[in-house]
Every structure is written in structure tokens, then in C-alpha cells.
Image: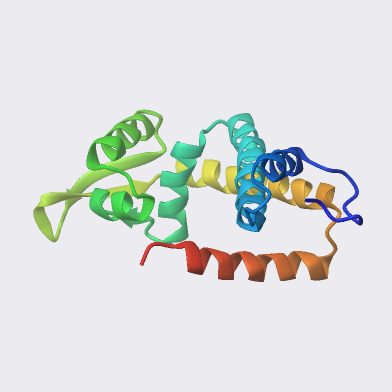
Length: 172
């Protein structure tokens, strides 16, 4: 149930109230929390995806080029390292790499330390695109936070609470 100081009941409140009417013995706080976390992630994810499209990329493509960018110069990783970081199958990774290489955003080359291996390196065009995309994505996230009405202290508190929640929910 929503508290009296909640300004606007939401869709999760309606779900909780429905459960309360048919199964009043259920303690539904976890459903309230995870239902809202899921809905927030989905809504903000859509905003970020739109921001990425406006600068010329997709979330999946961004994930690859951002991973290379975050690792610093020379912006190079193996396909295996990328797959592990992004939790993608090698087949899924190959498709993304093919598309990004055709677009000139990265290049694949033989690994000088492993004659059977490859290296994936971000190009200058890829670095320029990811730098624009990360700013656009952060602006979309910042706008969503601003629309929430959370102040700076509440935002910091929420970040800490979500860190704890994630640590407890992550697979062992």
C-alpha cells in the first residue's frame, strides 16, 4: 500500500492493492521494491536508448565501444575479454563486432602475443561517437533524476541503498 505522504499512487500500488484484496496475508514489500526498480530501469533505459539513437548508435553497439573506451589507451581488448565483460556469447559478440567494424568504429587485427587470437581496437571515429553517446546517455539519466524530485542527499542515499540491494541480489 502507498503511504499517505506518497503524492501519486502508481501502477505498482494498484498491483499491491489487488494482491491485498485476494491474498491479504502476503507481505508484498519486496514486490513493491523490485517492481519499481524494474519499471525505473525500463523507463530510463528507453530514454537512454533514444539519446544513443540521436547520436547514431544503439545500446548494444554503445556497450562494445564504451567497454573499449573505458579500458583506456590503446582502447584494445580481445573478443573474449569483450564477451566476458558484456556477458555475450561469442556468436553475439561476432555480430556486433562485424557491424561496428563495417561502420569504421573499430578494427580487428591479429594479436601479436597469440597467433590464433585477435585484438579489437576502437578507432578515432569510434572514440568520437562513444564520447558523444556517453554524454547524451548521462544527460538522459540526469533529466530522469531531475524529474524525480530527489534532492542531492536523497540521490546519494538512493545510490548507496541500490548498491547494497544489488550486492544482496547478485548471484553467489
